[in-house]
Length: 467
Ligand SMILES: [Zn+2]
Image (cartoon, rainbow, N blue to C red):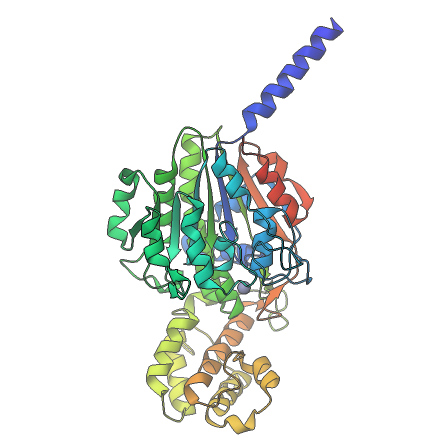
């Protein structure tokens, strides 16, 4: 009798384990999306749209560390390598070991050999560190042409994102290479609907090198959700598929400490996850959705010295556009001219609704900060110390230059600081932070993602799912 019970329990356990292995695996990576980016977006989403982030309600969740082999604060290349290969490496290295020689293999190659279809999707250029970690190797993450030339060798089924940053070099022409390997190239949203019928390897590339910022909503352009939905249709097959989808610009807006754009990038990412959730509803026993990040960016916090126990996320609604779009506006206004404080103030009033009902209220200190930004632009000799300027105006790329145009972002950064403070948002850095990031999982085998583990272990948890 005991033997029978033992056999019965063993059978149940084996059946449960085998039944849990997913065929369709989604790995969503919000680049730079820490706990706070998600929490602030969720609160804002609730207030403005009476909606919420689906993945925050996934039943299973854990945390992964993010440090790299060379630093407590990782970059996206080292983090992407840890997530795709299960090995840590130095910042800047893409699937090359810390010794600079040995190559590390992404589990996507193994999955492809086993017959799974593979999709790599991103909102930034397809040769950027995070997507590249799943299909290429490079001692330096900026070897964009080298990375692009490796893409078609993989034979992976679906690539989608912004176009190549460096399509042509002496190594070759990345577009010609795509063609040589039999990839079909799609560059307009109107053509997406033909992809499922193409029955072959496809590369979708937005000519603008990146998708638009969610806050800027440009009609007629690709969205991350569209690229994810098309990917599902293109990859669907009986054996199974793996699709990595990166929300790459949560990182960019967080680097800029741009509060509202960070929220809207996270909403774009959420919309892509909803496409996977729709698929999950049709194939609940065979689908696994994992949502995580490669690291946090900006050291974002909910709560600031200025607002104490209050937060006013509604204020973010007053930000009209991304820092990048606003830079275009002020460049048009001021290029080659002295930046007049009154003119700058009138622009800020117009676009950020300063002093209007429900808008941002400027105090004396805020005006002083804007005035300093104008001085910084007009009189570079007043701020000769590059690091000092970096701290004040986040003009780290351009602080060494003295042209007015290169210093204009000081106005934008000042507005980011003022708006963040008043909304109750803090930032500690314009780089990444070293905190662990959450992992949210739903579907077949999701319980395996509970707990606190290393980023290399997250990779290993996914790697063993391919049969
Ligand atoms: Zn970054």
